[in-house]
Image (cartoon, rainbow, N blue to C red; front, side):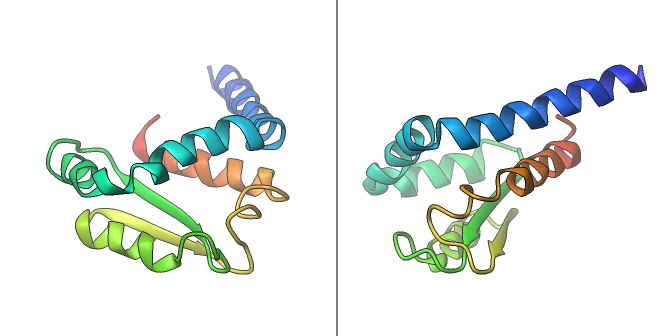
Length: 117
């Protein structure tokens, strides 16, 4: 059973790395633009996350992001107190993922591990 689980984890890591590398400009930005483009609705979304959902919330943000200030992630945390903010030094809006796909995949795996996924 452990060997099957290890294979699954390696496949999942590979898929995440591939997703981050090959579809960053398409899928990643589409999702991002949907979220950010609806900033006027963000308060309502955060209320739903805070009051209706019981899942853990992790926000990963690049310290050097000039598109969305790091303070926005801390604002999410102030609205959803269980949210954890991880700020990655020397990374911006793009390099938080691009150029560090393996590290990003490991961070996601750790989140899943903690949450039981």
